Image 1 (cartoon, rainbow, N blue to C red):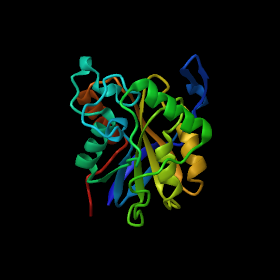
Image 2 (cartoon, rainbow, N blue to C red):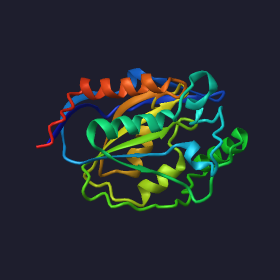
Image 3 (tube, rainbow, N blue to C red):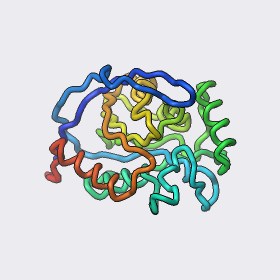
Image 4 (cartoon, rainbow, N blue to C red):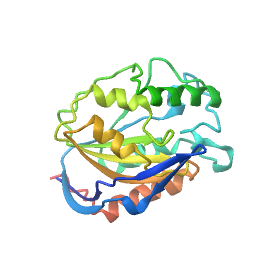
Length: 226
C-alpha cells in the first residue's frame, strides 16, 4: 500500500488580460490529508507529441520546455510523468488527437484558443481507457489561455472518473494552475480533484524532476507496496 499526503483542492481565481493570465493565489483553498494509493496512473497531454512530426517547435505553448536555452531532451510534462512512473510505479498514458496540431505556433494557438472558446471536444486516437483498477490519476496538463487543452476535456468526457482522486500536474508560462482545476472539476463532478505541482515550461528537465521528487517526499509518499 502506498501512502501520500497531498495538498488538497486549490481553487484559483484569475483574469486573462493582454494574453497573460493573472491569478490571485490568496483565493486558494488548501488543506492537507492522507491518501491511500493502491494503483496510480499518469495521464498527460503534451503538444509536441501532437504535431504529427518529430521536429518539435522551440516556442510552442506547451513545448516551451524545449527551447534551445534549456537544453532539455523532453518536455517538462513528459519529465513529470517519467518521474512519477519511476518513483511510484504509475502506468503512463499520453493523450493524442486524431488531427495533429500545426507545428507553426500561431496556427496552433489559433486552433487551440478556438477550441477553448467553443468548448470543443477534439477527436482522439484513443478516447477511452479502462480506469477501473486505478484509484489515483496524476493528470498532466499545460495551461492554454488559462484552461486545460480541449483534448483533455475529450478524454475526461469519455471516461468514468467516479470515485477517483485526480492530482493535477501542471505546466505553465506564468499562470500557474489558472482555471484548470475548475475545468477538471466540471468534467469530473464525482471525482476528487487536487492541485499537485505547477512548474514553468522554461524550467530545465533536471530541476523539474527534482521538484517532482521533492513534492512526493514532502507529501509523505511511501514506496511501501504491501
